[in-house]
Length: 418
Length: 117
Image 1: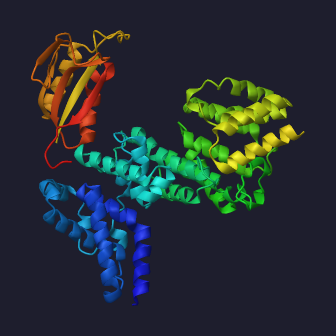
Image 2 (image 1 turned 60 degrees about the vertical axis):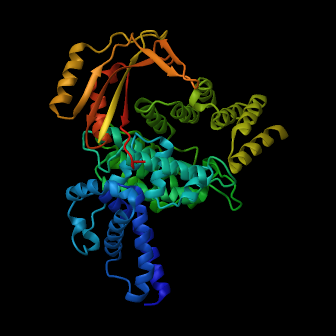
Image 3 (image 1 turned 90 degrees about the vertical axis):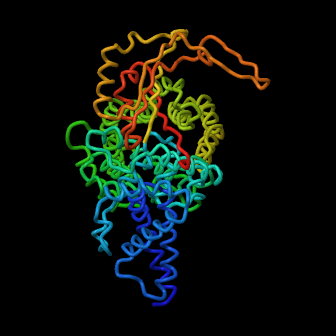
């Protein structure tokens, strides 16, 4: 056993199972700080021991046992934890006994991450804090990376995470999976966090890159974990399907220079057929049954795009029908915007434009560049060059992502050069 | 763990539109019975909403007494419950069952304890 191999093993185990380890420790001690600190202690110990003793057969079990021991040490040593010792004792008695058995095998260790998902996206925490905590504890991003994901200074993000952790501890937000009766109310915020991480990765809200592949990958990883833990929840299935079917187009969405390639211009041979197949297989159960959810419907729309051989022969009537359903179950100006664009493809630009003009007062779309951008495209197709140019300029004032800005500027130049 | 449920009701002095009807005495009695029977109630009372008096002591020691609640607000504390339950979820469940939550809002606060923050 050489040192480098041991270090690699620790790294691999930790990357794969850090969130599982944290979830187990958080469930055990009801405290995210203690979970993080004892996990770090265990890693440190592993880096010290494994090169000498060899990598244990069950690395996660080793780390878990060590971390638990380190946590107890910390509780005894640290005055801030002594107050909680009595409470923890009670928690210990209540906790599942599986974890306390000596040297459990890898597969015997329960996956407690679902509890952690629900705690991190508890409605008593602000939406920003929910996303930050989920990225930090379940997606294995360090605080500076989480800060970068949301374009805030590291200090701001660190403060946000500290405050959220303090609320979990002080208000005693529990580490538990909501019961079946609570799940419909609690699951959407868990899914929304994962969805938001993905959308930021799909099209970064600002910056020089169109995509943030790291965030898209993390979101898909989180959706896969959720799907594994809640295989029968159709909206979880729908969300995973949506992410896969959308991410399947990633390679075609930028050119060699990192420029944006719009759906109508994409080389569909570059789309990832494995992801599409996997997504298609998930869409069916997500859609089947009473009371279809918004993620399943959006996944179905994404599947129709993926199945089309080109932009014009896309099944627009079916896409419009699905947006009609989506407007019913989740009415929002953003959905109405996408619906209007689909109507324009089915019935012509004039019909779409009429719907878009009804959205200009919507508060939710104020400052959103894609509304004037969509209007501009339809005006251009109608030959209303002056109006189209004005709408492109409005969109250019609002857009913050560089490749998107370049696309809009190119469209505007094409209009005014003529 | 102790939680204080602050039951906010629309202030009678508020110029904003009042809800059609407030919670009935029977609804509150039913809630009080439920929270008492569950053994989680430590204390709880309704408060008169029209008799508030505010006291403030200035830096120079002068006592200033004024009629009414501290500030012109849309809502005023109309009652409270102090409950002892295991965690925030349980406290939120009781808050949601409180009739006041359907007519105004119920703010859930934790009782500060040393070494907690």
